[in-house]
Length: 69
Image (cartoon, rainbow, N blue to C red; front, side, top):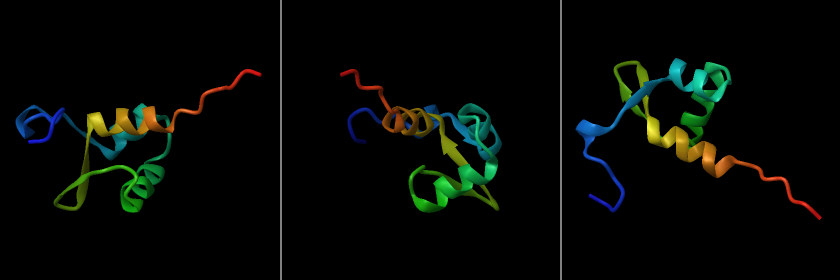
């Protein structure tokens, strides 16, 4: 296990609908992020589950700061 990784039994997985609600985007946007590889997910049957930490990491990395002159 790499540094900072949690055991699988401690990982909280979110549905696509839950991710969409957290990010305040449509479910289709979440599916696009998953299929493009920008948001990691696992497939369970015909649905996807996204690790909660991956959503937080994605949002943190996507943050656009305002630069002051």
